[in-house]
Length: 164
Image (tube, rainbow, N blue to C red; front, top):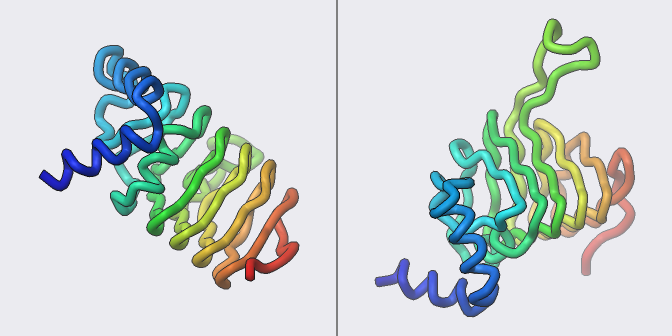
């Protein structure tokens, strides 16, 4: 009964039209069909190693934010109430400059509760973000920022302020 109630709340939050389009792509065209949550039809999410809380904010963010790419070969952990703007990329495995002959950088990405990731931000392997962090639009996060309430931006990302 709780799952039905949560689906109705999600439907009200994202709107019937977007929900219906996402369902058509996910269930009928079998795109992202193994996922247990509604995903925007323009996003690609590797579901097997993503740990997330089934809170309404995070699930609505998956459904609304298009053109996202979550590659979770080594795992992605999302805290409660995470928000993702369109075009966010989370990449947990990457190869070196010399191609596939060198070592592969593979570490999980961990994002704390109440984090907000701006449009077209890229988060690379091994990054940990603390609670209530904000990542600016277009940022490339290459290292961890474990403190709470940070605002980070840039390429590579650096601390530009703190949330109050």
